[in-house]
Every structure is written in C-alpha cells, then in structure tokens.
Image (cartoon, rainbow, N blue to C red):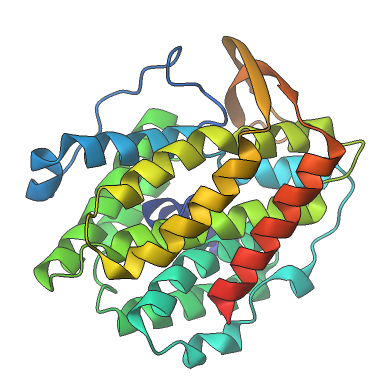
Length: 303
C-alpha cells in the first residue's frame, strides 16, 4: 500500500513539474494524429496565454509515463541503479531558487524511477528530498491530499490522470504566481525532463530498440518544452536553460521519426500503454551525442 501511494504521488510530482516523471503522458503521440482533450486550467494567466497553455498540454502528451519507461528499462535487463540518481543529501545544498526548482523536478523523476522499481526506502528518501525543496520554494501546499486522493481514485483512467496532473501543475503555477515567480514552474518541468532523459539514456543499449525509440521521440516534447520556456519573455532565470534546450535540440534535429497509426496495448503488469507505432532513425553517433549532452546538462543542474 505504501509503495502504491508513493507511485501515485511520484506521478503527481513528476508530471506536475517534470516531465518524464516524470513524468504522465503519451510517448511520441504526435501532434497531428492525436489531438489532446481539453485540460482543466485554474490559473487565470493560463487562460490569457493560450500559447503557454498549449505548450504545457502538449508536453503532458508527449512525455512517456514513468510506468512505461521503467517497464522498458526493466525489459532491457537493466537493474535498479541508485548510483545514477541525484543524492538526496544534496537537497540541502541548493540555496538559489533556480537550483531548488530544477532539482525539485530532478527529485520527482528520481522518485518515480525508484518507485517503479519497488525501492521503497529509496522512494521515501526521494519523496522527503522533493518535499524539502517544495517547502523552500513555499509551494508545499500546492499538491494537497485532495489531489492525491483523485489520483488514487482515477489511477486506471489515463485521461482523468492527465487532467488531475495538469490541475496540480496549475496549482503549483498559481502558488508561484502569487509571489511573482511564475517562471519557476517552467524550471521544475525542465529539471524533470532532463533527469528523466538522463535516466533513460543511462540504461539504453544497442539491442534495446524500444527504449531507444522512446528517447528519440523526445524530439516532440523538446519542441514543446522550448515553446513553454520561450513564453516567459525576459525571465533571466530561464535564459540559461533555454540555451541548454536549444543545444539539445540541435542533436535531436538529426533524429528522423516516421509515424503511423496510434496503438494501445498492455504491458506484462496490465498497465495500458498508448503510443504511435513509429519508425525512428538515429545513428549510434547521434545517440551517443545526445547521451553525453544530457549528462553534461544534468550534472550542471545538480551541482
């Protein structure tokens, strides 16, 4: 029961602020073929900024769910590796708002990874680290018991989960807006996306095409992530991460994806997996370049 609750909470933390967690969405769904259902938005500014709202919505729909990604990692034969995670004790070292926000996303992704591998003690530690950073950012009340209960009640309904997670994101965004720190929510999302991709590339092997495809399909979510970051014009906190994403995008531009009809299936645990049947073309050299760049950016964020 504790493990299940941690999984549900990690889904919220990752997706409401991260991405891979992070993450809660559909891998490589493609914007042309799979129009997203309307997402409930509570923040007035989101209503007034349709570009930002659309960017966030598309991010939620192009990020693989933590269950899917963890299942693919396990299927590759990889074992849980705590050494690749950001140590929880480092949470006390982050004193700037930028580092706190980025690493709230990072710890959310790490929490999902640990939870999916049934690492209960690790999950508790990463949950504590995430809560610590949320408290420092004064957003610990953004994800309340009501949201957690809604996740538990709708855990088998993907569309409902996406709506709940988006509500959690806009709740977080609303708390930050009150303190004129709205751009911080984008930093959390970037941190989670980078960490999730880092975890995936840390496990990718030449014979694991499924995981390689999911990494390649992040080309879609990266485009939307850049659109989100760019929507905060003049935000100095985002200037550095925007440049990081531009440099990562230059590598993903070398990835070719040919999409076909969306398909649904269930994995060995009965979890519904929704995604488009796609053919990706990415050279070993490009994959290695993406892996190296993600590791470089990620290590910079967690310092």
